[in-house]
Image (cartoon, rainbow, N blue to C red; front, side, top):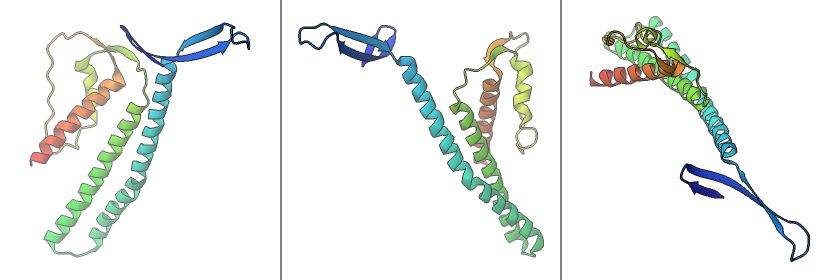
Length: 182
């Protein structure tokens, strides 16, 4: 049974039992708040769905990546006209980069599906953003990442891992948007 209160919705389990087997006997009714149990069950179900989806997406990525590598190796052995060779190499490179992008996305999806409580701690954005940006030293051709912070910013109470993921996602999305314009 769902019960709406001023503090939110409660999920209640209702059990009714007769005190005696007579028609005129009294009854005992027990109301049990199962809200946390229901939330935990939903979280476990979501985690299982996310795990399965991640697994199903990752399965075909390995043969796709291996095929792109094989194409690249074969290109070194063949003597094709320059325009065709360039196009085939670009396509193989695009496939490889896209596979890595999807793998990263699936890994991040799996991380978010874990519903970790996080380990909040003092974080200084000026200093801690460097770890998040390390991943981008090189792969963003033609894109220059610049950061600017006001002097003397105080530490904030955040989960470092979630902060890292947020920065990585922001930069990934911005780079993807910039590259799609070219």
